[in-house]
Structures are given as structure tokens and as C-alpha cells.
Image (cartoon, rainbow, N blue to C red; front, side, top):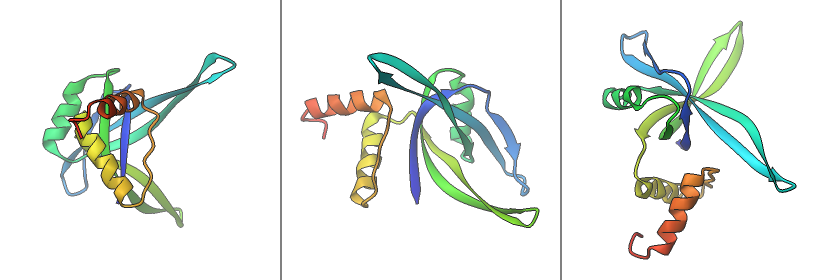
Amino acid sequence: MKIAIIEGKMYLNPVTRVTKNGKPFLSFSVGVNSSYKKDGKQVDIPPTYFSFYCFNERLMEQIREYGLKKRICLIANIEKIESIVDGKRNVQEVYIAVAINPPFEAVKSVMDAIKAQGSSVSTSSDFFKEEEKKAEDDDFLF
């Protein structure tokens, strides 16, 4: 199973949809901004948008209430969905939200578990870099 930790902002209101079996789910996207320095100046890159789905009713409510343009952190399972369109096989990765704004310690535990399985974890999030630095400075946290 692949896991993603995405930090960004919701720019559009989440939409409640219903599966063919009548089960409600939430559909929403999160934009992640990136930048880099070139010749001492910050260069902004247009946001990358990730589409999310959520099937947990309690989590759906939390996401609906969260609001737009606030920083949000999500832990998600990445799943592959196959479909056939015009006779051609299409495989798409989708993000299934499993947690919203988890405490740093929880995110750190997920990241450590992923690393222990031999997978790599990287994040461009300033939040994670700052919190990880604080955690390294505080011996009692870990």
C-alpha cells in the first residue's frame, strides 16, 4: 500500500457525491505550492493539485467544516483504479483521505514506518521540516 502525506490548501468547496451503491463520499482537491531560489530570488511554481476522496463520515464532516484557503495536512492511501474507455485500459492513482491535520508525532510515526519498510519519504513542506528540527532538538519527544 502506498501512503501520501500532502500539505496544501483547498481552493474549492468539497462536493458530496454518491457511489453506484448509494454510499456518500466527499470529493475535493488540495493545491500544493512550490518554490525554489535562483540567483538569490524566490521563483514560485504554479500549484500542483491533488484530487482526494473520503468515505469516512466523521472525516467528511471535519473536511467540510475546515474551510477554504487554510493550510490542511492529509494522510491518504494511494489506490489504483482501472477503467476501460473506448476500448483502452486506463489506470489512475487516487488519494483516499484517512486523516486530517494529524499531530506531528503521528505523521512522524507514519513516515518512520514507511522508511522501515524500505520505502523513501520526502516532503517539501516547511511545516514538516520545522517540526522535525524541533523534534530533533527535544530529546524527550522521541
